[in-house]
Image 1 (cartoon, rainbow, N blue to C red):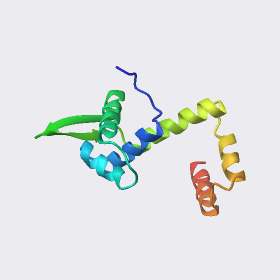
Image 2: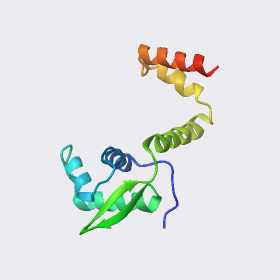
Image 3: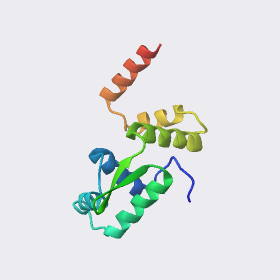
Length: 124
C-alpha cells in the first residue's frame, strides 16, 4: 500500500477535479468526461482512480454493478496542501519569492492584486 501523499500527479489532479465537480462518479463517468477532451483508455482511468483511493483521496462504495467514487477531502484542502508543499520545497517555506515572481511575470491581474490588497488590510 502506498503512503498518503499531498501532491497529485497532473493526471491524478485532472481526475480529481472531475470527481470534485461531479461529487459521486463512476469510472465510466470520469472516462467519458476525459474522452471529450482527449483520447484515453478506460483502464488508465480505472487504474488512476484505484491509485487515488489507495492514496486516500477517493473512497468507493458498491452500487449495483459499479463502484461509486467520492472525494475524501474538499478541493480547497487538497490544493492548499499542494501549494504549501510547493512553497516549502521550492521556496524554503516563504511565499514571498513566489508572489514576487507572479507579479513580475504578470501572472496576477490588476484586479487580483487589488483583491489581495483588500484581504491583507482586512487581516490586520
